[in-house]
Image 1 (tube, protein in one colour):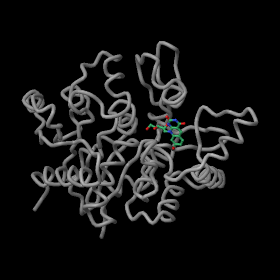
Image 2 (tube, rainbow, N blue to C red; image 1 turned 30 degrees about the horizontal axis):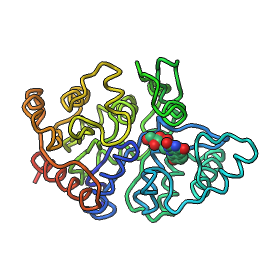
Image 3 (cartoon, helix red, strand yellow; image 1 turned 45 degrees about the horizontal axis):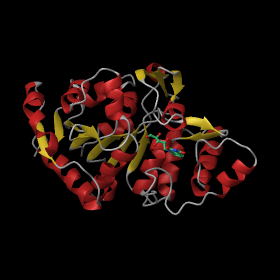
Amino acid sequence: MSGPRVVAISGGVGGAKLALGFYRVLPPDSLAVIVNTGDDFTHLGLHVSPDVDTLLYTLGGLANPDLGWGRKEETWAFMRALAHLGGDTWFRLGDADLALHVERTRRLARGESLSQVTAAVARRFEIAAEVLPMSDDAVRTRVSTDAGVLDFQEYFVGRQCRPVVNALNFDGAAQARPGSGIVTALSSPEIEAIVICPSNPYLSIAPILALPGLVELLRRSKAPVIAVSPLVGGQAVKGPTAKIMAEMEIPVSPESVVRHYQGVIDGFVLDERDAAAAGAIEGCGVPVRIADTLMNTLRDKERLAETCLAFAAGWAPA
Ligand code: FO1
C-alpha cells in the first residue's frame, strides 16, 4: 500500500466511532486520521491529548465504552491517592491512562514531536492506521463565555459546558503548521475520500481547518471531501454541539453545518431523521446522501463507513 485510501478528520468520541468503521471495512493500513489537538493541555505537569488518545484507544481496541474517553477496565488508585493528598481531582486520569501521559510528556521533553510520540504509541497498540495529530505546534481552544474566557478543558470538564458561549478562538492556530504526515496522507495516490467525521464542527473540526494551508490541501486533493452530519433529528448525539450553536445564534440545523463547511466539502451525509433538510442543502450546491448516522453498534459504524465510501465513489476515478 502506497498511502491511505481514506483520510478522516476527527475530534474525539463521535469521530473515533466512524474512524473505527473505516478501520474495519478497509484493509488496516488504508486509513489515516487527522485529529484535533485544540483540546490538549498540561495537567499535573503532564501533556494530555484527549482526542488523539480517544483515537488511539478506539483503534487499539482499548477504549472505555462507558465513559467515551479513557481506557477500558481502568482502575483509579492514582486519583484516590491524589484526592487523599488534597490534590487536583477535577480532571480524572485513570491509572493506565496516566502511563500514556507520563510517557508522552517524557518523550516530548526529550525533543520528540507529538506526531512521533503518537506514531510510537500506535505501533505499541498494534494500530495499522495512521493517527496524525493536526499539528506538532501548540494550538489551544479558548472559549469566550458569560463566565469569561476559559481554557477548553475548564469549560468542558471543569464547568460541564454550562457557561453560555459567545465565541471560540484557537490560540496559536495562525502560526501552526499541519502535523508531519498530513501533507503526505492527503496526497496519497490511493486516496478515495476525505471524510469530516461527525465531531463538533465548531469545537473539534474548526481548529483543524484553521491551520494555515489545511483547507487548500483539502481542496487540492483528488478525492472528494465529505462531511457526516453531527446532528441527528436536529440534535447532537452527545456533547454540546446544539447548545453552542444556539448560544452563538446559529440555527441548530444540518443546513447551518453545511454552510459552516461550505467551500470545503463536496458532499454531505445527512441523517435520515433530518431528510427534510436535503432540498435546502442541495440548494447550497452540496450533494446529499441520506443515511442512518447513529453509531451504536460496531455494524452501525461499518455501515456508515461503507455509505461514505459509496458516496465518494461517485467522484473518485474508476
Ligand atoms: N472528560 C470528562 O468529562 N471528565 C474527565 O475527568 C475527563 C478526563 C479525561 C482524561 C483523559 C482524556 O484523554 C480525556 C478525558 N476526558 C474527560 C474527556 C475529554 O475532556 C473530552 O471528551 C474531550 O476533550 C472532548 O473531545
